[in-house]
Amino acid sequence: MSLNYKKWFLSEVEKAMRESGMTREKLMILKRRFKRERRPNEKLKSIIKDYSKIYEMRGLRTANINKQLEKWRKVLPNLKGGIANKDMKIDTITKRLINGKFVIPFWERMGSNRIEATMEMIRILKENSPFEFKQEESELKEWFIDMKLNIYKQTQDLFKKMAKQKDNFFIAPIQIGTIEKTLRGSHYYMYDNEYELGMFELFASLFQHPEAFINDISYIYCSGDIAYSSKTRERADIEPRVHIAGKEIEIEFLMNCFSSKRYISCFVD
Image (cartoon, rainbow, N blue to C red; front, side, top):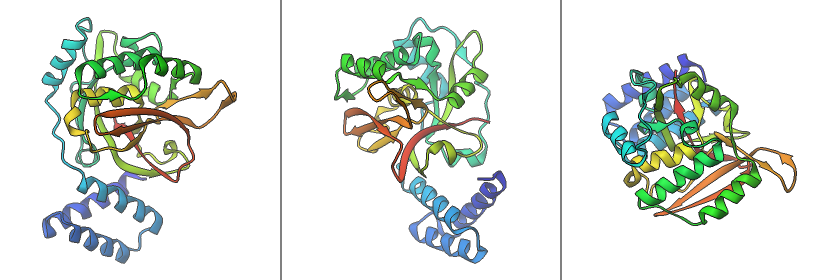
């Protein structure tokens, strides 16, 4: 999706907001306007669907950066470094797409590989939040090893670009399950400045604001993680899906074969 088209769309959204006060009726007005503009139908349908979900989502105000950092210090006292991109600015377009700005550790600071870091984040979430995992930690670790869990290259390239030698955290403008994308593969349907995140980043976000997501999310695909099945020896479109039901979390690995999915991503220019 081009930046110019997003800007045009948001200008129409803001105009409709002023006129009708962000109601369902406003969305219908917006749809009729788009039809008159004769924009591409499929793209239009996708955007309207995305923004309809954003409007209906319960609002989340993330804690300020210092409070989030202080919360991490309590569970990760050995991570003394600062925040890599603490001076980042978020434009008005991105603000309408995200749930909030989350402070998240670089996964490399918490394990020698993606599996170790994800297991450490699971431990932190279990000990410091209302969430419980359906699977035992030993079962999950064995599963992750068997699946050769790793990080998607484009996402890792983003982290390498942001990371500095003395910094242990970064600010991630994140959307979690708000936007639904159509396959094949969310990799092919991202905004220009959008990057998929994995289970590590999802659980870090749940750690910061567990109250915002309990009972609010069903299935979240973590497309920033990729997997390999040693049993079938297939390097495939296999990715983790996290099921949150009340306070219970269940992790699954599924083929990337669904018609649409809700996922976690961040927006970084």
